[in-house]
Length: 399
Ligand SMILES: Cc1cc2nc3c(=O)[nH]c(=O)nc-3n(C[C@H](O)[C@H](O)[C@H](O)COP(=O)(O)OP(=O)(O)OC[C@H]3O[C@@H](n4cnc5c(N)ncnc54)[C@H](O)[C@@H]3O)c2cc1C
Image 1 (cartoon, rainbow, N blue to C red):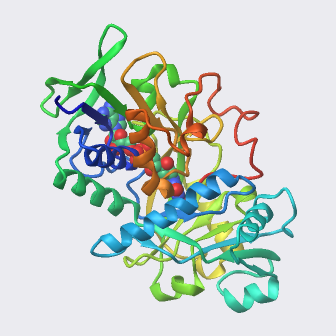
Image 2: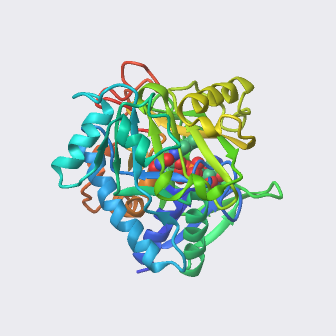
């Protein structure tokens, strides 16, 4: 019997991990994206993403991240150089951490599960992290189990592995899915010359992130594209802003949305900001506004004064593919046999990369998967509604 033919649409972290895992299970896999390498507009294509187990009281995501961390270390051992950096995760709070709050609950879950995050008060914060303004943050902790991944490079490496292991690649944009009766029969791809190419498949795996509602309109009330700004602040003394003195951080994140990363070798500190935001057209996402730059400077002046005057050397509007409840969506389309959707990263899926391929491949092949129950198909959401979003957590799921 010939191998099942799978078309994976989208080569971000969901698509690349899915294609690789499906191929390793012996299936015939074709991966389609608009460019051969990581697409510059993909959410996965960025210098860095946070990898953390700190999820408030949500033990499910804590455990998923815990499993993924083992995977990141495995990938580091297998690669010729590490793309995951175990610099830990610094959580700062401008009010005393208290039960029910994101920071306190994350700290509590870590401790209950045998980890040893270091708690701070003003004086210990000042002593250990002098770049931070300890007057602003009376409380917080550092968790050594976590760090950040060089996300764009991770995807590039995964795509190269796909090619090496026999995943076929088509450069083009999927215009729609083809069907025979109620079963999918492949995808229609517009290739760069403008021609349409039909690719036959037994299963189509839709991994197009923020573009999902365009290909699966029934999910347009469940998933939405939301623009989130990222700024790069140039630093002359790179070493001062990395290593133990400047780990990845979330600064009062449930209230303010600010988070950031150690300086890159290229000499900048990346500062991100998440919010519920407003929906955008993924192909017309706009630019980071001057107003946002001012807000970022005012945060820095207060929190990390030495960066307040640093020049903005780069900016990017990145897209969350937000589900209405903050959970990923990885499941079979109940209305179309042979279609699996893997999307809804909701601003926090990259860290799970080492687990994603397995979850998606199990969904395609009908195997049980420990994590899949949380990512089931949902239809009743109103994407972004205030009452639905993140009600199960005391703080953000994002980053
Ligand atoms: C600002 C920001 C910060 C974040 N920070 C973190 C973090 O710190 N930690 C963390 O874990 N996660 C983080 N995330 C979330 C994480 O980046 C995403 O959840 C994840 O990258 C989504 O991957 P994806 O494969 O679903 O989508 P994408 O990476 O966007 O990939 C989708 C791909 O589909 C392709 N595509 C689109 N339409 C078509 C089509 N019609 N045909 C063919 N191909 C198509 C695109 O070109 C693209 O390559 C962040 C996200 C943003 C925006």
